[in-house]
Image (cartoon, rainbow, N blue to C red; front, side):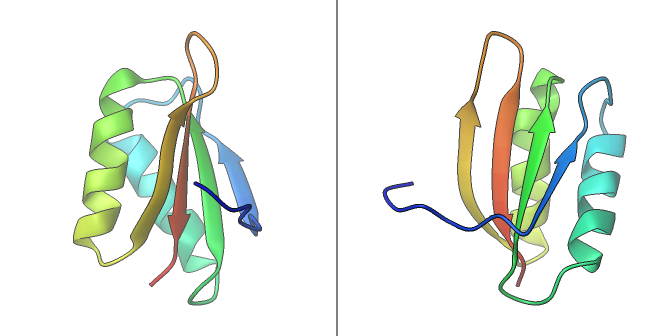
Length: 80
């Protein structure tokens, strides 16, 4: 991301595996208003591809997927 985005909710899903990473991300998005931003932190490598793809398929905007250390990834999504 080239500009800073205000994150409205961040959830830590380290230790969770697919499909729970997607399900919990989707439930967290349901708590937000349209246009708000969710950041999800995962350490399950398949979730790095599956969560953004699944949320994009649901119509949400994936803003960023970035590795934050050796084992963790941050996925930033704007609710549709």
